[in-house]
Image (cartoon, rainbow, N blue to C red; front, side, top):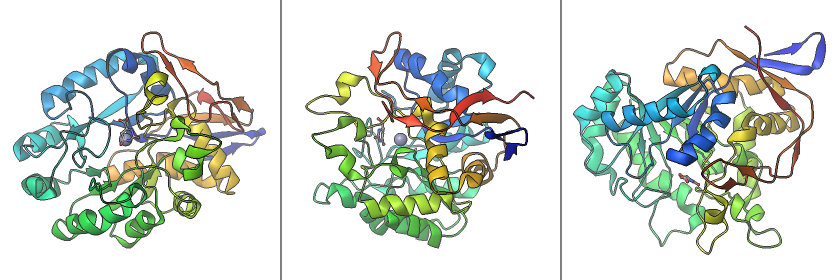
Length: 356
Ligand code: DOR
Ligand code: ZN
């Protein structure tokens, strides 16, 4: 990463990738895809559609719909994932990976989150799949929360480590695993203590909000996501991990748009829409931590190295120009969305790709 010598208020960094995003489908896909595609070179696209993306045919068709929604001039590459169910076929998963259709497979514990009802009821149901993934070097992406209703919602990630992740690690020590959107000091410690095959993504919002944000002066549905934000000490642990320089931690926005009425509801959906100002949010956080020089590695190097992919050779420009995040982003056909940081002023502005 370079400060422009002629202008200290410009930063040029390698174009980042988003290692965890929900691009949705149909009108919502058309409304949101370019927000991700304008900033990121690549993105790991979550498969929790209705119906879920469980095989090569569904993933190829979804990839084509994404490419049709994205402005081709942005040079964006979606990386597809396979939604694991109790009935996933190891041969299909392997073919998808070796043919380059799937970059990874996603394990949602059944009923853990949005469209997770077809997820895995018990990890033992997919042991043959995990065995195969370990053998071929295919990454497993984990939604790391237990679904046991007797476990407090704020403890579900920590209990997942004890009951499930530690078992997966013991049974499949050669399996590349990403602990997605971590929210706790426990997860940071687990990832740090694991070998080099275990990594984690960290969202913009979990670096900025703690659980109080959901209840400030009333119920705040636009700060509700899963895993839910935790106590302040956990947020601080995530910040330390993100700026640590450790190659085990990298950018994954978990941008998960829901139309405003589906958020502001008696039973509001989980998910924050952070794609429009994603790199600006991370830049603000890294700068507050005095670590803007570590942003590039977190955003553009650790992820591709973990996945075994080349680094992007493009560059983006950030300018120190205050940017006001709008209260609402209207989509043509999928209603209104409330972006993360709505109404905030962020200090760095994404100014597009640097000329080649
Ligand atoms: O908050 C979330 N929203 N967490 C998830 O795991 C899923 C996502 C969604 O798809 O809406
Ligand atoms: Zn997600």
